[in-house]
Amino acid sequence: MIPSKVSLVDVGPRDGLQNEAAQVSTAHKIELVRRLQAAGLRAIEVASFVSAKWVPQMADGAQVLRGIARPAGVVHGALVPNLKGLQAVLALPLHERPAEIVVFGAASEAFSRRNINCGIDESIERFAPVVQAARAAGLKVRGSISCALGCPYEGEIAPERVGRVAQAMRGIGVQHVGVADTIGVGTPRRVQAAMEAALAHFPLAEVSGHFHDTYGQALANVYASLEMGVQVFDASVGGLGGCPYAKGATGNVATEDLVFMLDGLGIESGVDLDALVDAAAFIGGVLGRKPISRVSNAVLAKRRAAEPAAAA
Ligand code: HMG
Ligand code: MG
Image (cartoon, rainbow, N blue to C red):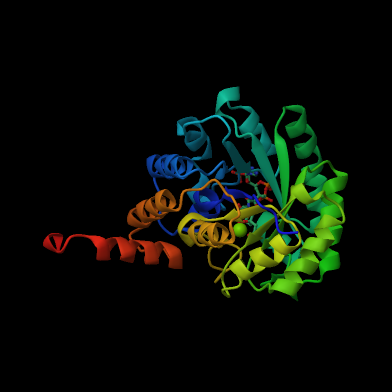
């Protein structure tokens, strides 16, 4: 049954900004997080503790975590690929830590090697002590399965391969799994099959969808997941994003587009669309371009049309 309420994780400050050619300042990242929180987002991915040589845009993760406000009820997440990343997180004072970390694997061997420089089995071995130490320190651990629908190097990915990684993640104590369509090639029935494979190993409340919108299928894929009762979705303000190791892949479904659809369906997300459009316009201004979100552009056009003629 379609849920009456969903949780959205805005991954814009991480998935979005990791992929920008220009380095966005720490102050602008902090302001983006503030605006997302003001819009009602209760979960935000704000940083990655990865190699600065691989992803220089995320090198200031610790400073971002230090600078953001922490209203009650807001969960901040950070990507952590290995023990070195976790050590950096645990070196932070308690009040500066993220509440959640994300270990990120893949259903495709080739993508795993490109993205985190090791194969799938080895990635699980690397994650195991990370998960154990993170949980011992009171952090929640999410797992992300990239290329769950298709891979830029291996083509179509069968659901069984998603199931295998989900099972392995579950086996090492990962508490939540995200089914990620890195290159946005999934279509609704195939997404349902990938979700089904993840749901064989995790409870419904602990499976989420992370859909890049490269082929314009992301909203349809969210809807297909809602039909299965899935209630947690990643989305990216302004539709920002991509992955440096999946060339040509565009951003996640824009949070604004998703909120507009959820509002129309009467599904509660707790997010205020107008404030979210402001946040998208803010980061678009920083990056020097319009948001790619259809809804943002429609709302902004409507606002302009409503401005008094004298202002023109
Ligand atoms: P590696 O080269 O195999 O690691 O990288 P290594 O252990 O051999 O170390 C090599 C160097 O990296 C050393 O430095 C380490 O200290 C350093 P050097 O001695 O050469 O100066 N290093 C680190 N530095 C900072 N933080 C760390 C760290 N680990 C090692 N944690 C590694 C392995 C995973 C670190 C590397 O491959 C990497 O950083 N990859 C980047 C992966 C990434 O951020 N990808 C984008 C995010 S994933 C994504 O977008 C997908 C997602 O959105 C879902 C979807 O859409 O599919 C989540
Ligand atoms: Mg992604």
